[in-house]
Image (cartoon, rainbow, N blue to C red; front, side, top):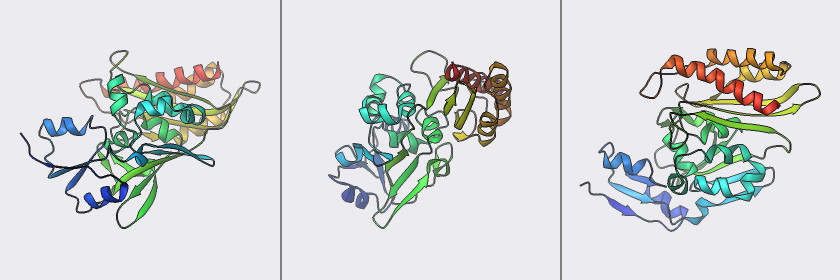
Length: 283
């Protein structure tokens, strides 16, 4: 049995002081951290339980942006009238996370800090151009999410810092969007491949503008494809055009083989998912 001190700060300033010397490990929903501790992959000296800091769980409008506290759960994102109205792509992604129990415990900030390429909230966030707010006792800084996550389980968090907020610009009215993932079963599945797309579409012209495409589980980090976005904006989106663009997705992927799927299967599914998503969006 591991022994560690548990600290329960009542506000953000207390939390930042508790992690200032880097010996305290922040606890959000615990859906990943507690498993790692149980399996003896992590032996913290102290755990800083953030559940009592209400300000970190808020979801609010701020002009053209939505500000979500890092402790907002996936279920909060799904059910919030603010995210449902202004960030429906993110709500769609969060709705696919795990089980109802996991969605009610797991947090948006925890999903980001876990930095898994298979995380279901991250492809929508990347497609939406999300930024993260990082606080320490000494400073506050902001980073684009794409730059913040550097590899599986790796981020640019600094010692003594805490991810406190996620800031996303509101989607435009009428934008078409879709997050779709492939798993080994219909529910409770870790993503084998995931694809998030948003765009504005003119049915009369058969063309889109401002497309954003992000893939998960097919490279070390969730990332956007500027090349696919360029092709989408320049192409007529009929069946042939979609097929040609989707085929290019194979070149974008750099997947690995693991117990869930081979690299080649993931590469093919990357193309298939993009084709399905685009077909649904234009029809």
